[in-house]
Length: 164
Picture 1 (cartoon, rainbow, N blue to C red):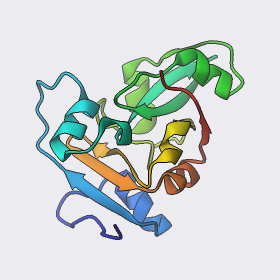
Picture 2 (cartoon, rainbow, N blue to C red):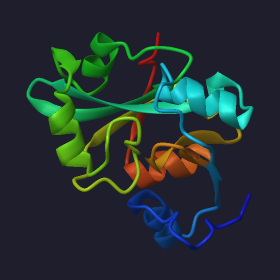
Picture 3 (cartoon, rainbow, N blue to C red):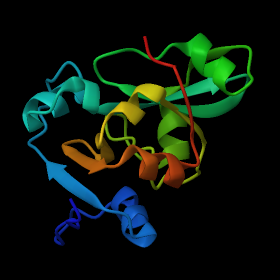
């Protein structure tokens, strides 16, 4: 799994951050279907990976502060659990434009890595049960596979049960 992304247009802020940190990762590309009902579900199916190992990056507003929740695509983000994990009271999904502005990515391609403005991040504790997990590499149709410990370290995340 120590493969680096191929040159020739696949570099994103997420892959640049991974290269800079010198962690092992693998980039997986697939043909994105604009009609897909779920970006994460599409990634799991296209890559032939169990949905429990593919994680989606969601931006929420917790008490007025943008916060990232990273949960398996097979589940949903529990907003109350996310708020509790960061010591907050209320959480709601962030305005899509605010999520795109703060991250520097488009919806469906928001990566927890290499964000324009790093946000506090909570990764569902289930990630620790896998040798590697997949998260967006910063573009629709592009995923990065890495060890959960590296994802946690690079995003300065905490882990908690935030999926349902």
